Image (cartoon, rainbow, N blue to C red; front, top):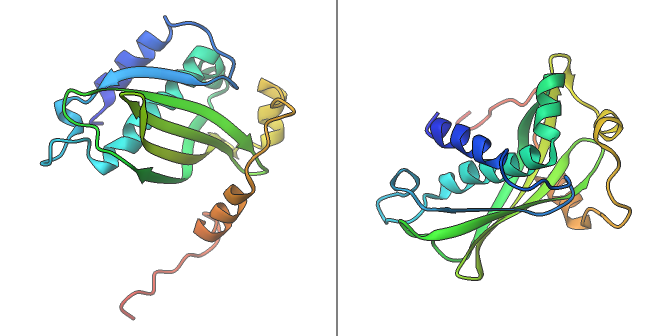
Length: 182
C-alpha cells in the first residue's frame, strides 16, 4: 500500500516508454524519495525489494505481457528472493533499476535486478516469480505457449537451482510446522 500511488504512476509512465521484448533489459530511472529511506537517510533494506517490483512491472508493461496477463487474470507473485548490498542509495540520489529475465525452470521465472547509481552497482537481487490464475499456479508450459519460448542462449545459472533447493519452503499444500521454542 505504501507504494500504491507511485506504482500506478509508474505503470502509467511505463506504458508511454519504448517497447521492449520480455527478454530485453528494462532500465527505469528514478531517485530515492523520503518515503524510501530509513533513519540513516538511505533506502531501507526492505524498500529495495518494493522498488524492484516496479522494475519488473516496467519490463512487463513495456513488453506487452502486463496487458495480456490482465486479460488472462494472471497475477505475478514472488516465491523467493535474495539480495546483496554494496553501497547505500541516499535520499534524493538518482539511480536506475535494471531488470531482466535470466531463465525459467519447471516452477518459476527468474529475474536479476540491479540498483545502479553513478555507474556502479549498489545492490543486486535475484527473484523467483510465479504467475497465478484463479485455478492456481500457471505452468511454465502454458506461459511459454502464451508468450513464446526463451532465446536458445538463455541458460539459467546452475547456482540458482541450488539456491532454490536450499532456500525453499514446502509447497502451500504440504505442512510446514513451526517448532521454535518447543
